[in-house]
Length: 244
Picture 1 (cartoon, rainbow, N blue to C red):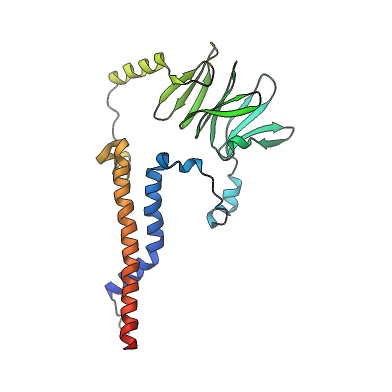
Picture 2 (picture 1 turned 180 degrees about the vertical axis):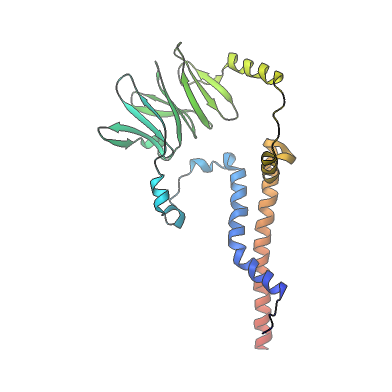
């Protein structure tokens, strides 16, 4: 039996089968590149119907603890990848204001409790949590003078004496800038180069990598959609010839 290998046929059917995954990857890449502008991290969705969210491993990893704090008043808070919880006896009670928000650190200051989360800096006073600065916060540290310092992405180290008004800490920012000029260039590893080529940072820098992601994402979407269209046209032509 001779194998009748038709490259065009294989290409057509392969493209058709993979069109949906390629389209999803291309479109999602564009959304990821513009997630700050679109605010996708602020929008909650119900996607538990997807198979990947129904596995036992996913369910077991829902509460990944990242931080904890027992206040002077005796209240214990636990920050997790899925939000903030208060210890009530032997069970955890979810804080609805931070539901689904990854929490990285919690600190106590004279003016209240400060929380560093993926959605920004949060302040708790009189049992109420409110966000006082947007951003991607990673750490919170209470100073002896009563102020709090938080590390936040793209803004560096910010400090506040009341938890509501935040600004770059002048002393720490100046020290970091002075030290950076004296340090040797960080060696570039092959792994980092490959990642930067993949994301486009090697061509456009960190602030412009969205250009590369948009180009690749749009190209993938275009190839997927035109591939399906070409298959549809071919099938339609075959049907017309068969009917004629």
